[in-house]
Amino acid sequence: MTTITITNPIRQLSKRLSHLDKKLSVELKNYAPYWWEESLNTSPSASQQVLVSLARFANLDIKSVLDNSQPLRFKESACNYKHASNKEPSQLDAATALVASSAKIISQITKPKYSIFSDALTLRKQFLEAGNPCVNLELLINYCWQQGVPVLYLPELPVSKKMDAVVVDIGGSPVIAITKKCKHESAVLFLLAHEMGHIFHQHLAIGQLLIDEGISDASNIDEQENQANQYAITLLTGEKTTQFHSDGQRLKAKKLVESARLNAIEHQIDAGHIVLNWGHSESKNCSQDKQRMVIWSIANAALNLLYPNPIWEQLIKEQLLKNIDENEAQGDQLDYLYKLMKIEE
Image (cartoon, rainbow, N blue to C red; front, side, top):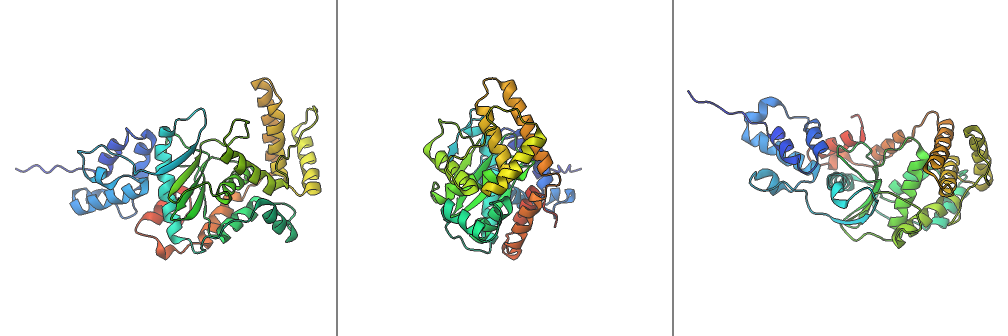
C-alpha cells in the first residue's frame, strides 16, 4: 500500500516565516487568495500558485519561497528610516515589505497621473479662497488623489511592529501610507500633511521608501523631518511655528473645545489640529510624565467631543475606489489590498 503525504503549502510557508515576523506568520492564512481551498493541497501546480501569490502579498523573495533550502527573506528595498528610540529598523522589515507591496499594487491601478504638489502657502490659499473654512483631512485626501498620489490607511498590518507613516516612490510616482492607528481625523491630518512635505521637498529617490517610525517635533530631528514638519504646520495654520497655549491655565475638555472652535473660526485652522497642537505645546512644558499624561487625557477627551461620529476612514476608502481602475489589477493583488484596508467588495 502506498502512503500519500498531503502537505499544506500555506502552513509550511507560515512556519518558515516565523523567524522573520511571528505575527505575520500567524496571520498569513487569513490572506490566502479567494480561490484557495484545502482540497488543493495535493495539487503541485495550485500549491506553487498560492505560494507565488502570497509571496507577492508579503513582498518575499520568490526564489527563497520556492526553494526550501534557502533562508526565507523579504525582497530588498531602498529605505530611508526616520528613527524612533523604541524601534530598530530591522524590526520594521515585515511592515516595510507589506507597505511596499501595497504601494506597488495601488500605483499600477491609479487613474490620475502624478503631478507635483504646490508649496504649503500656495496650497493653503487655494483651499481657503475656494470657500473652505480651513484645511481639513477631506481636502488633503482629495488633493493627493487629484495629483495622482494615492493615500492608503493601513493601521491593521498583520505584523509585530510598524511605523507611523511611509512615502513610497514607485517609478517616480509617490504613494502615501498612514500606518499608525488613529481614532480622530486630526491625527491623520497632520501625518498626511507631514508626508506631503516629504514629497514636496523631494526627499525620496526613485524606488525608495521614506519611513517615519515616529513623527516628532523634537529639537534633535534631522533636516528632512524639520522641513516636512514646517510644510505641514504652514499648510494647516499659515505659519511655520504656530503653537497654541493656555498660558498656564488648566483647561477642562469642554473649555478646550470651546476655545479650539473659536480659534478655528478666527485663524481658519482645523479645530482638531488646534487641540493636538495645544497638547504638544503644553506637554513640552511639563517636567513630569504624570503631568504630560493629564494634558493628553484632556486633549483626547476634547477630540472625543469634537468628533463623536468619525467618518474619515470611509472618506479614504471612497477616494481610493473612485480613483482606481480595478481592471488593471493583477491576479489576487487587489484582494490583498482590500483586506488590508478593510474594504468590502
